[in-house]
Length: 453
Image (cartoon, rainbow, N blue to C red; front, side):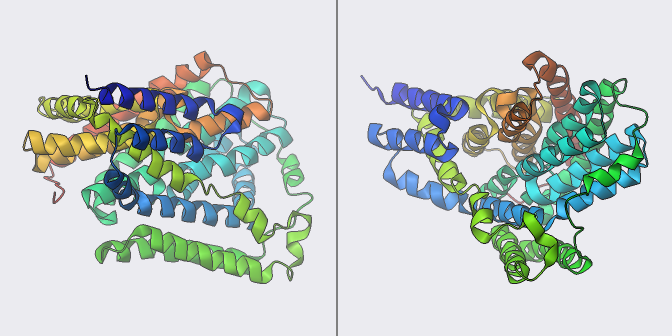
Protein backbone atom coordinates (compact mmCIF):
# COMPACT_ATOMS: atom_id res chain seq x y z
CA UNK A 1 0.00 0.00 0.00
CA UNK A 2 1.28 3.48 -0.92
CA UNK A 3 1.30 5.66 2.19
CA UNK A 4 2.78 8.72 0.45
CA UNK A 5 -0.56 10.48 -0.26
CA UNK A 6 -1.63 10.10 3.38
CA UNK A 7 1.79 11.33 4.53
CA UNK A 8 1.52 14.40 2.28
CA UNK A 9 -1.90 15.33 3.72
CA UNK A 10 -0.71 14.83 7.30
CA UNK A 11 2.42 16.94 6.74
CA UNK A 12 0.34 19.71 5.18
CA UNK A 13 -2.21 19.63 8.02
CA UNK A 14 0.45 19.68 10.74
CA UNK A 15 2.30 22.51 9.01
CA UNK A 16 -0.87 24.63 8.85
CA UNK A 17 -1.54 23.90 12.53
CA UNK A 18 1.98 25.04 13.47
CA UNK A 19 1.63 28.17 11.30
CA UNK A 20 -1.59 29.17 13.02
CA UNK A 21 -0.79 28.20 16.61
CA UNK A 22 2.93 29.11 16.56
CA UNK A 23 3.78 27.05 19.71
CA UNK A 24 6.45 28.65 21.93
CA UNK A 25 6.35 31.67 19.59
CA UNK A 26 8.02 29.61 16.89
CA UNK A 27 8.92 31.79 13.91
CA UNK A 28 6.82 31.35 10.80
CA UNK A 29 9.80 30.22 8.73
CA UNK A 30 10.64 27.49 11.23
CA UNK A 31 7.08 26.16 11.28
CA UNK A 32 7.10 25.76 7.50
CA UNK A 33 10.66 24.36 7.56
CA UNK A 34 9.50 21.56 9.86
CA UNK A 35 6.92 20.60 7.23
CA UNK A 36 9.48 20.86 4.41
CA UNK A 37 11.97 18.59 6.18
CA UNK A 38 9.18 16.10 6.92
CA UNK A 39 8.15 16.18 3.23
CA UNK A 40 11.69 15.32 2.14
CA UNK A 41 12.18 12.62 4.77
CA UNK A 42 8.84 10.97 3.98
CA UNK A 43 9.43 11.14 0.24
CA UNK A 44 6.40 13.28 -0.67
CA UNK A 45 8.80 15.72 -2.40
CA UNK A 46 12.12 14.97 -4.10
CA UNK A 47 15.32 16.91 -3.50
CA UNK A 48 15.20 18.16 -7.10
CA UNK A 49 11.71 19.60 -6.55
CA UNK A 50 12.92 21.26 -3.35
CA UNK A 51 15.81 22.94 -5.18
CA UNK A 52 13.42 24.11 -7.91
CA UNK A 53 11.22 25.68 -5.22
CA UNK A 54 14.01 28.11 -4.35
CA UNK A 55 14.35 29.24 -7.96
CA UNK A 56 10.56 29.70 -8.16
CA UNK A 57 10.27 32.03 -5.16
CA UNK A 58 13.60 33.84 -4.72
CA UNK A 59 12.40 37.03 -6.46
CA UNK A 60 9.26 37.30 -4.30
CA UNK A 61 11.19 36.58 -1.10
CA UNK A 62 13.97 39.07 -1.86
CA UNK A 63 11.43 41.72 -2.88
CA UNK A 64 9.55 41.23 0.40
CA UNK A 65 12.76 41.73 2.39
CA UNK A 66 13.54 44.84 0.34
CA UNK A 67 10.08 46.28 0.92
CA UNK A 68 10.24 45.65 4.67
CA UNK A 69 13.78 47.12 4.85
CA UNK A 70 12.60 50.23 3.00
CA UNK A 71 9.55 50.50 5.27
CA UNK A 72 11.41 50.22 8.59
CA UNK A 73 14.00 52.76 7.41
CA UNK A 74 11.29 55.25 6.44
CA UNK A 75 9.58 54.57 9.75
CA UNK A 76 12.83 55.29 11.63
CA UNK A 77 13.13 58.54 9.68
CA UNK A 78 9.64 59.52 10.85
CA UNK A 79 8.19 59.48 7.34
CA UNK A 80 4.99 57.63 8.25
CA UNK A 81 4.34 59.68 11.38
CA UNK A 82 4.88 62.82 9.32
CA UNK A 83 2.31 61.58 6.80
CA UNK A 84 -0.16 60.65 9.57
CA UNK A 85 0.13 64.12 11.15
CA UNK A 86 -0.51 65.70 7.77
CA UNK A 87 -3.63 63.58 7.42
CA UNK A 88 -4.95 64.54 10.87
CA UNK A 89 -4.37 68.24 10.24
CA UNK A 90 -6.01 68.04 6.79
CA UNK A 91 -9.12 66.52 8.38
CA UNK A 92 -9.57 69.78 10.27
CA UNK A 93 -11.53 68.36 13.20
CA UNK A 94 -13.98 66.30 11.12
CA UNK A 95 -14.22 62.67 12.22
CA UNK A 96 -15.66 61.61 8.85
CA UNK A 97 -12.88 63.30 6.88
CA UNK A 98 -10.35 61.75 9.24
CA UNK A 99 -11.74 58.27 8.46
CA UNK A 100 -11.40 58.75 4.70
CA UNK A 101 -7.97 60.38 4.96
CA UNK A 102 -6.63 57.63 7.23
CA UNK A 103 -8.06 55.07 4.80
CA UNK A 104 -6.42 56.76 1.81
CA UNK A 105 -3.10 56.91 3.67
CA UNK A 106 -3.46 53.17 4.32
CA UNK A 107 -4.16 52.59 0.62
CA UNK A 108 -1.05 54.50 -0.48
CA UNK A 109 1.22 52.77 2.06
CA UNK A 110 -0.19 49.34 1.14
CA UNK A 111 0.28 49.90 -2.59
CA UNK A 112 3.84 51.18 -2.22
CA UNK A 113 5.05 49.07 0.71
CA UNK A 114 2.81 45.96 0.68
CA UNK A 115 -0.06 45.12 3.01
CA UNK A 116 2.12 43.59 5.73
CA UNK A 117 4.14 46.79 6.07
CA UNK A 118 0.99 48.92 6.07
CA UNK A 119 -0.52 46.89 8.91
CA UNK A 120 2.66 46.70 11.00
CA UNK A 121 3.53 50.39 10.66
CA UNK A 122 0.18 52.17 10.47
CA UNK A 123 -1.81 50.28 13.12
CA UNK A 124 0.32 51.60 16.06
CA UNK A 125 0.25 55.12 14.56
CA UNK A 126 -3.54 55.02 14.12
CA UNK A 127 -3.94 53.73 17.67
CA UNK A 128 -1.82 56.63 18.94
CA UNK A 129 -3.83 59.13 16.91
CA UNK A 130 -7.26 58.01 18.13
CA UNK A 131 -5.99 57.79 21.69
CA UNK A 132 -4.63 61.35 21.67
CA UNK A 133 -7.77 62.66 19.98
CA UNK A 134 -9.90 61.02 22.71
CA UNK A 135 -12.02 59.06 20.22
CA UNK A 136 -14.15 56.54 22.15
CA UNK A 137 -13.98 52.74 21.93
CA UNK A 138 -16.87 52.51 19.47
CA UNK A 139 -15.48 55.11 17.08
CA UNK A 140 -11.93 53.82 17.05
CA UNK A 141 -12.92 50.54 15.34
CA UNK A 142 -13.72 52.39 12.11
CA UNK A 143 -10.19 53.77 11.92
CA UNK A 144 -8.60 50.48 12.96
CA UNK A 145 -10.53 48.49 10.35
CA UNK A 146 -9.35 50.98 7.75
CA UNK A 147 -5.76 50.18 8.79
CA UNK A 148 -6.42 46.43 8.56
CA UNK A 149 -8.96 45.35 5.98
CA UNK A 150 -8.35 48.20 3.56
CA UNK A 151 -4.60 47.53 3.70
CA UNK A 152 -5.34 44.00 2.47
CA UNK A 153 -7.72 45.28 -0.21
CA UNK A 154 -5.21 47.77 -1.60
CA UNK A 155 -2.42 45.21 -2.11
CA UNK A 156 -3.28 44.49 -5.75
CA UNK A 157 -2.49 47.18 -8.33
CA UNK A 158 1.29 46.64 -8.41
CA UNK A 159 3.18 43.37 -8.48
CA UNK A 160 5.13 44.67 -5.48
CA UNK A 161 2.01 45.52 -3.45
CA UNK A 162 1.90 41.93 -2.23
CA UNK A 163 4.63 39.25 -2.48
CA UNK A 164 2.05 36.75 -3.73
CA UNK A 165 1.62 39.01 -6.79
CA UNK A 166 5.34 38.67 -7.52
CA UNK A 167 5.12 34.91 -7.09
CA UNK A 168 2.19 34.74 -9.51
CA UNK A 169 3.90 36.96 -12.09
CA UNK A 170 7.20 35.08 -11.90
CA UNK A 171 5.49 31.71 -12.22
CA UNK A 172 3.48 32.69 -15.33
CA UNK A 173 6.15 35.02 -16.74
CA UNK A 174 4.10 38.19 -17.16
CA UNK A 175 5.40 41.70 -16.58
CA UNK A 176 4.89 44.53 -14.10
CA UNK A 177 3.09 46.56 -16.77
CA UNK A 178 0.76 43.69 -17.72
CA UNK A 179 -0.18 43.29 -14.06
CA UNK A 180 -1.00 47.00 -13.78
CA UNK A 181 -3.14 46.89 -16.93
CA UNK A 182 -5.27 44.05 -15.57
CA UNK A 183 -5.31 44.82 -11.84
CA UNK A 184 -5.18 48.64 -11.86
CA UNK A 185 -8.90 49.06 -12.69
CA UNK A 186 -9.74 46.20 -10.30
CA UNK A 187 -7.83 47.91 -7.50
CA UNK A 188 -9.56 51.26 -8.03
CA UNK A 189 -13.02 49.68 -7.93
CA UNK A 190 -12.38 47.42 -4.93
CA UNK A 191 -10.62 50.14 -2.92
CA UNK A 192 -13.49 52.60 -3.45
CA UNK A 193 -16.10 49.96 -2.60
CA UNK A 194 -14.14 48.97 0.53
CA UNK A 195 -13.90 52.57 1.73
CA UNK A 196 -17.65 52.97 1.26
CA UNK A 197 -18.67 49.64 2.81
CA UNK A 198 -16.51 50.07 5.91
CA UNK A 199 -17.81 53.63 6.28
CA UNK A 200 -21.46 52.52 5.95
CA UNK A 201 -20.88 49.81 8.55
CA UNK A 202 -19.31 52.21 11.08
CA UNK A 203 -20.99 55.49 10.08
CA UNK A 204 -22.95 55.79 13.33
CA UNK A 205 -19.83 55.20 15.41
CA UNK A 206 -17.54 57.68 13.68
CA UNK A 207 -17.46 60.94 15.69
CA UNK A 208 -18.71 63.99 13.83
CA UNK A 209 -15.96 66.17 15.23
CA UNK A 210 -12.82 65.87 17.33
CA UNK A 211 -10.76 68.45 19.17
CA UNK A 212 -8.39 69.74 16.50
CA UNK A 213 -6.32 71.49 19.18
CA UNK A 214 -5.16 68.08 20.42
CA UNK A 215 -3.34 67.43 17.17
CA UNK A 216 -0.27 69.22 18.50
CA UNK A 217 0.01 66.56 21.24
CA UNK A 218 0.70 63.97 18.57
CA UNK A 219 3.95 65.64 17.55
CA UNK A 220 5.11 66.46 21.08
CA UNK A 221 8.32 64.74 22.12
CA UNK A 222 9.61 64.28 18.58
CA UNK A 223 11.06 66.57 15.95
CA UNK A 224 9.56 67.02 12.52
CA UNK A 225 11.20 65.28 9.61
CA UNK A 226 13.78 67.62 8.03
CA UNK A 227 12.76 68.86 4.57
CA UNK A 228 16.01 67.58 3.05
CA UNK A 229 15.41 64.03 4.27
CA UNK A 230 11.76 64.21 3.21
CA UNK A 231 12.84 65.19 -0.30
CA UNK A 232 15.36 62.34 -0.43
CA UNK A 233 12.72 59.85 0.74
CA UNK A 234 10.13 60.97 -1.80
CA UNK A 235 12.72 61.03 -4.61
CA UNK A 236 13.78 57.48 -3.70
CA UNK A 237 10.17 56.25 -3.84
CA UNK A 238 9.62 57.91 -7.22
CA UNK A 239 12.85 56.41 -8.57
CA UNK A 240 11.80 52.94 -7.39
CA UNK A 241 8.41 53.23 -9.13
CA UNK A 242 10.04 54.40 -12.36
CA UNK A 243 12.55 51.57 -11.98
CA UNK A 244 9.72 49.03 -11.82
CA UNK A 245 8.54 50.08 -15.28
CA UNK A 246 11.99 49.97 -16.89
CA UNK A 247 12.83 46.69 -15.16
CA UNK A 248 9.63 45.21 -16.56
CA UNK A 249 10.53 46.26 -20.10
CA UNK A 250 13.93 44.55 -19.98
CA UNK A 251 12.73 41.62 -17.80
CA UNK A 252 14.84 42.48 -14.75
CA UNK A 253 13.45 41.00 -11.48
CA UNK A 254 11.58 43.63 -9.46
CA UNK A 255 13.39 42.54 -6.30
CA UNK A 256 16.62 44.09 -7.62
CA UNK A 257 14.88 47.46 -8.01
CA UNK A 258 13.31 47.54 -4.55
CA UNK A 259 16.48 46.26 -2.85
CA UNK A 260 18.60 48.90 -4.61
CA UNK A 261 16.26 51.63 -3.33
CA UNK A 262 16.28 50.17 0.18
CA UNK A 263 20.08 49.94 0.31
CA UNK A 264 20.39 53.56 -0.88
CA UNK A 265 18.00 54.89 1.76
CA UNK A 266 19.63 52.83 4.51
CA UNK A 267 23.01 54.30 3.48
CA UNK A 268 21.59 57.83 3.65
CA UNK A 269 20.05 57.10 7.06
CA UNK A 270 23.32 55.68 8.40
CA UNK A 271 25.38 58.58 7.05
CA UNK A 272 23.23 61.11 8.90
CA UNK A 273 22.41 59.03 11.99
CA UNK A 274 24.89 60.75 14.31
CA UNK A 275 24.83 64.13 12.61
CA UNK A 276 21.18 65.16 12.73
CA UNK A 277 19.72 66.34 16.00
CA UNK A 278 16.17 65.46 14.99
CA UNK A 279 16.63 61.72 15.57
CA UNK A 280 16.94 62.52 19.27
CA UNK A 281 15.94 59.72 21.65
CA UNK A 282 14.13 57.94 18.82
CA UNK A 283 17.45 57.15 17.11
CA UNK A 284 17.65 53.55 15.84
CA UNK A 285 20.93 51.95 14.86
CA UNK A 286 21.37 49.68 11.86
CA UNK A 287 21.23 46.61 14.10
CA UNK A 288 17.88 47.76 15.44
CA UNK A 289 16.55 48.22 11.91
CA UNK A 290 17.87 44.79 10.90
CA UNK A 291 16.00 43.15 13.79
CA UNK A 292 12.72 44.57 12.49
CA UNK A 293 13.08 42.79 9.12
CA UNK A 294 11.38 39.40 8.77
CA UNK A 295 14.46 37.50 7.66
CA UNK A 296 12.77 34.14 8.06
CA UNK A 297 10.39 34.96 5.21
CA UNK A 298 12.74 33.35 2.66
CA UNK A 299 12.77 30.14 4.67
CA UNK A 300 8.98 30.31 4.97
CA UNK A 301 8.39 30.83 1.25
CA UNK A 302 10.71 28.03 0.13
CA UNK A 303 9.47 25.64 2.81
CA UNK A 304 5.73 26.13 2.25
CA UNK A 305 6.29 25.72 -1.51
CA UNK A 306 7.92 22.34 -0.80
CA UNK A 307 5.09 21.27 1.53
CA UNK A 308 2.37 22.20 -0.99
CA UNK A 309 4.20 20.38 -3.80
CA UNK A 310 3.77 17.22 -1.73
CA UNK A 311 0.01 17.51 -2.23
CA UNK A 312 0.55 16.31 -5.80
CA UNK A 313 1.03 12.85 -4.32
CA UNK A 314 -2.37 13.08 -2.62
CA UNK A 315 -4.15 14.11 -5.83
CA UNK A 316 -5.10 17.53 -4.42
CA UNK A 317 -3.46 19.46 -7.26
CA UNK A 318 -5.18 17.33 -9.91
CA UNK A 319 -8.56 17.70 -8.17
CA UNK A 320 -8.27 21.47 -7.87
CA UNK A 321 -7.01 21.69 -11.46
CA UNK A 322 -10.14 19.87 -12.64
CA UNK A 323 -12.41 22.17 -10.60
CA UNK A 324 -10.72 25.32 -11.91
CA UNK A 325 -10.71 24.09 -15.51
CA UNK A 326 -14.43 23.26 -15.42
CA UNK A 327 -15.38 26.50 -13.66
CA UNK A 328 -13.43 28.57 -16.21
CA UNK A 329 -15.83 27.25 -18.88
CA UNK A 330 -18.95 28.55 -17.10
CA UNK A 331 -21.00 31.22 -18.91
CA UNK A 332 -20.56 34.97 -18.50
CA UNK A 333 -18.90 36.43 -15.40
CA UNK A 334 -19.19 33.09 -13.59
CA UNK A 335 -16.13 31.94 -15.57
CA UNK A 336 -14.04 34.30 -13.42
CA UNK A 337 -16.14 34.62 -10.27
CA UNK A 338 -16.44 30.90 -9.49
CA UNK A 339 -12.67 30.18 -9.78
CA UNK A 340 -12.00 33.29 -7.68
CA UNK A 341 -14.50 32.05 -5.11
CA UNK A 342 -12.88 28.60 -5.03
CA UNK A 343 -9.51 30.25 -4.32
CA UNK A 344 -11.16 32.55 -1.76
CA UNK A 345 -12.49 29.60 0.24
CA UNK A 346 -9.10 27.90 0.18
CA UNK A 347 -7.21 31.08 1.13
CA UNK A 348 -9.63 31.91 3.95
CA UNK A 349 -9.31 28.61 5.73
CA UNK A 350 -5.74 27.50 4.94
CA UNK A 351 -4.03 30.92 4.60
CA UNK A 352 -3.31 32.67 1.30
CA UNK A 353 0.38 31.70 1.04
CA UNK A 354 -0.13 27.94 0.66
CA UNK A 355 -3.30 28.59 -1.36
CA UNK A 356 -1.38 30.84 -3.78
CA UNK A 357 1.14 28.08 -4.41
CA UNK A 358 -1.57 25.42 -4.69
CA UNK A 359 -3.38 27.68 -7.15
CA UNK A 360 -0.25 28.14 -9.28
CA UNK A 361 0.40 24.41 -9.48
CA UNK A 362 -3.27 23.64 -10.18
CA UNK A 363 -3.65 26.26 -12.92
CA UNK A 364 -0.49 25.00 -14.57
CA UNK A 365 -1.89 21.45 -14.41
CA UNK A 366 -5.28 22.62 -15.72
CA UNK A 367 -3.61 24.33 -18.67
CA UNK A 368 -1.92 21.05 -19.60
CA UNK A 369 -4.84 18.68 -19.01
CA UNK A 370 -7.59 20.81 -20.55
CA UNK A 371 -5.38 22.60 -23.12
CA UNK A 372 -6.40 25.99 -21.73
CA UNK A 373 -4.94 29.12 -23.26
CA UNK A 374 -5.80 32.71 -24.08
CA UNK A 375 -8.92 34.01 -22.36
CA UNK A 376 -9.62 30.99 -20.14
CA UNK A 377 -6.05 30.68 -18.87
CA UNK A 378 -5.70 34.44 -18.32
CA UNK A 379 -8.94 34.42 -16.34
CA UNK A 380 -7.65 31.63 -14.09
CA UNK A 381 -4.31 33.37 -13.53
CA UNK A 382 -6.03 36.52 -12.27
CA UNK A 383 -8.67 34.56 -10.36
CA UNK A 384 -5.73 33.27 -8.32
CA UNK A 385 -4.59 36.86 -7.72
CA UNK A 386 -8.11 38.01 -6.79
CA UNK A 387 -8.90 35.11 -4.48
CA UNK A 388 -5.58 35.32 -2.64
CA UNK A 389 -5.60 39.12 -2.30
CA UNK A 390 -9.25 39.79 -1.50
CA UNK A 391 -10.49 36.42 -0.28
CA UNK A 392 -8.22 35.98 2.76
CA UNK A 393 -9.91 38.58 4.93
CA UNK A 394 -13.16 36.59 4.74
CA UNK A 395 -11.77 34.72 7.77
CA UNK A 396 -8.89 35.94 10.02
CA UNK A 397 -6.73 32.87 9.38
CA UNK A 398 -6.59 33.67 5.67
CA UNK A 399 -4.12 36.54 5.78
CA UNK A 400 -0.88 36.90 7.71
CA UNK A 401 -1.42 40.67 7.66
CA UNK A 402 -4.83 40.30 9.33
CA UNK A 403 -3.44 37.86 11.91
CA UNK A 404 -0.68 40.37 12.75
CA UNK A 405 -3.24 43.19 12.87
CA UNK A 406 -5.49 41.34 15.32
CA UNK A 407 -2.55 40.29 17.48
CA UNK A 408 -1.14 43.82 17.57
CA UNK A 409 -4.48 45.27 18.67
CA UNK A 410 -4.91 42.55 21.28
CA UNK A 411 -1.57 43.53 22.81
CA UNK A 412 -2.76 47.15 22.88
CA UNK A 413 -5.95 46.17 24.71
CA UNK A 414 -8.31 46.32 21.69
CA UNK A 415 -10.24 43.07 21.37
CA UNK A 416 -12.31 42.19 18.31
CA UNK A 417 -14.43 39.06 18.56
CA UNK A 418 -14.65 36.60 15.68
CA UNK A 419 -18.35 37.43 15.28
CA UNK A 420 -17.65 41.15 15.08
CA UNK A 421 -14.86 40.60 12.59
CA UNK A 422 -16.94 38.31 10.33
CA UNK A 423 -19.77 40.85 10.14
CA UNK A 424 -17.59 43.14 8.11
CA UNK A 425 -14.71 40.92 6.92
CA UNK A 426 -16.84 38.21 5.30
CA UNK A 427 -19.21 40.65 3.59
CA UNK A 428 -16.38 42.84 2.36
CA UNK A 429 -14.47 39.87 0.97
CA UNK A 430 -17.38 38.46 -1.07
CA UNK A 431 -18.39 41.87 -2.46
CA UNK A 432 -14.80 42.68 -3.45
CA UNK A 433 -14.26 39.30 -5.13
CA UNK A 434 -17.49 39.76 -7.12
CA UNK A 435 -16.55 43.29 -8.23
CA UNK A 436 -13.00 42.23 -9.14
CA UNK A 437 -14.25 39.22 -11.10
CA UNK A 438 -16.70 41.38 -13.03
CA UNK A 439 -13.97 43.81 -14.07
CA UNK A 440 -11.57 41.05 -15.15
CA UNK A 441 -14.40 39.45 -17.17
CA UNK A 442 -15.09 42.79 -18.89
CA UNK A 443 -11.39 43.23 -19.67
CA UNK A 444 -11.24 39.76 -21.19
CA UNK A 445 -14.48 39.85 -23.16
CA UNK A 446 -14.95 43.48 -24.17
CA UNK A 447 -11.39 44.78 -24.36
CA UNK A 448 -9.78 41.53 -25.48
CA UNK A 449 -6.95 41.69 -22.94
CA UNK A 450 -4.83 38.53 -22.85
CA UNK A 451 -1.57 37.41 -21.34
CA UNK A 452 0.94 35.95 -23.76
CA UNK A 453 0.97 32.57 -22.03
